[in-house]
Amino acid sequence: MDIDNLQTRLKDQIELGLGKEAGVARTFSNLAYIKYLKGYPEEAMANLLKAEELTREYHGEDCEKHLIVPYGDLSWLHYHVGDYIKCQSYLEKLEEMKEKFPTSSTSVLHPEVYGEKGWTFLKFSYKYYDKALECFKKALELEFEEREWNAGYAIALYRTEKELSSVNDSPAIKQLRRAIEINPQDAVLMVLLGLKLAVYKIFGEAEELVEKALDMSPDCPHVTRYVGKFLRQQGHVDKSIALLHRALKRTSQSAIIHHQLALCYKRKKISVCKSGSFHGKGAEIQQLLRKCIQHLEMATSLKPSFIYAMAELALLYGEDKDITKAEELFKKTFEKALAKNDSLQVVNFNYGQFQQYHNKCEPLAIKHYTEGLELQKDTADGKSCAQKLKMIAERRISQDPMDGEACGILGFVYRMQGKKEQAVQWYDKAVVHDCNDKYLSALCELRLSLQQ
Image (cartoon, rainbow, N blue to C red; front, side):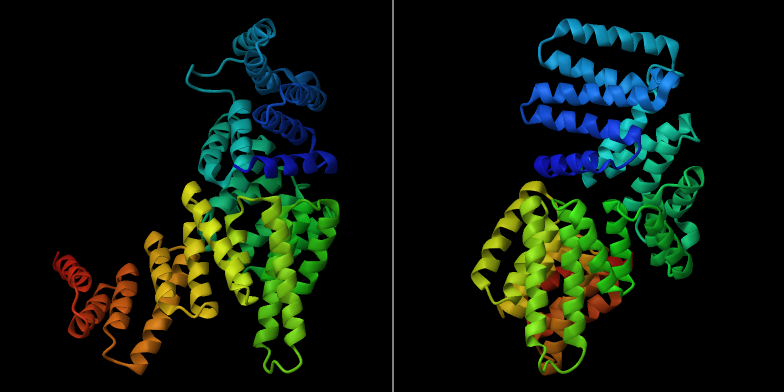
């Protein structure tokens, strides 16, 4: 996780008053953990006590079982700062709660614990989304109607679910509908449902939900950010830009909003480039490129672990003809992606584009598209790597049908796509024109698999 970026986001949430008291209490708890990690135990303690206070205020007379997590946190922190008497005091309170609110077995936690674990996994890093799903599911098994756990489960499904063949097959859409039914005032859930429905081309209902969400919470940066994404995807780029700039006035330190704005200006730039004659449009295209770069530089400075934004920024430096700067940033991005074992495919794809279009080095472009496709074939970036390799190979074969390397590239692409017969045909041609061990090995493996 990126501790500094997370701290900024948590502080923004508190200052903007986002979420109801239960959510604000959770935010103070998360901020307490960050303060502890950064070496400020007194501030961490103050934040946990604030979380306890807000939990009491929100739940009133029914607050006791909801204090399980704040008391556990306070016990933990008192232990780590060496105050064992207060630590023991909170542990005794927790023992009393266990007796008063027993679970079905010692291996089953209270729903409040599962739910808060779920929200924490969801907040800290996308790498924990699967764990968040598991926690919310367990919480809902114990408290099926609890709106907090239903909302969390819906958001976790939204973030993890890949596109399915039919809208009726989508657990995320079903859960989003259920969570909204339980809490009709949750504008964030509404806009997420709108985004999901748009994936399945149910645009009418999607637009209604997005408009309603924006009417309900016009000044909530979370809502405006998602509405901005929806508008961009529907081609309403100027409206998206206006909304995102409005959100930025309330939360200027949001790396995500800066990234979303960069994507808007990028789409606008592409649209201008595709509109026909470039005559008289050079200045406009350059201005849009500079805005893309500006917002990506802000996003990566606010969140230094933002690998996607780093890769996009490096590619745009190349487009801006600053090859040295692009190479330097790509080097840092590769190092970070390898160290974190994160987003390596998108870095390979962007570096491949940089080499192909801006550095004019096709061999390196082929190398990185190939490495990107080998990492994962079914993702958007994996499919893009395959498409680029295919375009390069087909162009070269049209110029020289005896280009063995180009035939081998097509064989590799078809093999990765599971099209074995077509892969065999192209590897056959590759071996004829450029016989080497790599092509022979792939060909033998394919023929054996076809015989099984």
